[in-house]
Amino acid sequence: MRRRTFLTGTGAMAALATLPRAALAQQVSQGIDLANKTVTVGAFTPITGPVPFYTILTHAAESCFKWANETNALNGWKINFVTYDDGYEPARSVAVTRRLVEENKIFALTAATGTAQSVAVIPYAKEVGLPMIGPIGGASALFAERLVFPLLPDYGWSAASNLDYALTGLNAGRVALLWENDELGRSAKRGFDLHLAGLKKEAVESIPFEVRNTDFTPHVRRLANAKADVVILFGSNANLAAALKAADRTGYQTKWMAPFFTADPTTRKLAGPLLDGVYFSSWLAPVGADDPDIKAYRDSVAKYFPSDPVGVFGLNGWSNGALFVRGFQMLLASGKPLTRANLVDVMETMTNATIGGARNVTFKAGDHRGARQEGIIQAAADGSFKLVREFRPFPSGVFDAKLS
Image (tube, rainbow, N blue to C red):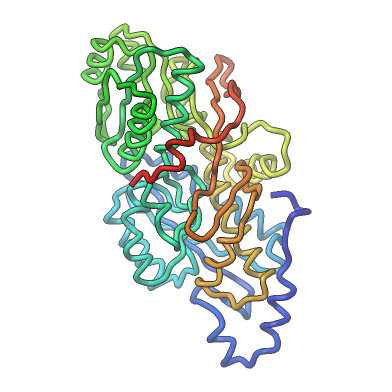
């Protein structure tokens, strides 16, 4: 984030300084160390399991916190970030979150990785009053809870953006959806189906697959038989690469579209030149943009995790970490006691904020839709990703609908 936009905590510190020590203890939530001016947050991350490269997201968020500490973004306060492996298994995500709360005394769950994983944690978070800031996932359930502040859009909105471009930008006549059989894919399917219904059109195919699927040959044969001229895939980087390889093996030629997080060097490493020409909807500005917020991401990841690729995947993790940084800045500036409940209150006053690679981020009571626009980018043969359609609001019929 731009240094000039940083808020200060002078009012909060002055107010706290006048309170007796016993009163201070009642004015803060666990995870707040007033003596050392440290706030502890935590996350689950898939170090093991089917998508270990998703730890790039966690590394980027950690880079953001290190950057915030070194640049004094929080007016003398430091962020302590604790993470544990959940293997990308929702049940383990819940167990990890419980451990973070009970053992590490976290103030908030921040930049935790996974859609189904984050959804699974919601009941426990509600039980203990734990804010979930920047869960890295896009599901309808994440927008329905007051404790949850998703920066990512619902994947249903993103799927509708993909579909809109397929129909109006690529002039597709026969569109198919290939979707991961969990909350990520089901959210995408809801938005895709809703937008098609509003247009009085139908998909030529809608095919689910499991997250651990590595052979997409049967799926591709169905797509080929349906003569789909655009295929929209909502799944992991590995899923997209495997589908592209299956299409190449079987000689099936079509245009492919996918969600923003697959527009990344990680996918390029898995798919090679097969990624050339693939389109992606994206709520993030291009990683190479000449912008202080995005430059801070590039510089900090290069410094703290030099082996990680610099791409939209990492910018996603950084931006979700930056969402907590901004929220805690707002809490310090408010002068309110440093409690979880007050963090939630101030987060609901965030309006048209620049958060990492996201723009116009807004939260308000009853409406936790953070990112509210997407562009379309395309993979180029030189390894870059280029913006081919400017950012615009999500299709209104889908964005304004309840996707639950």
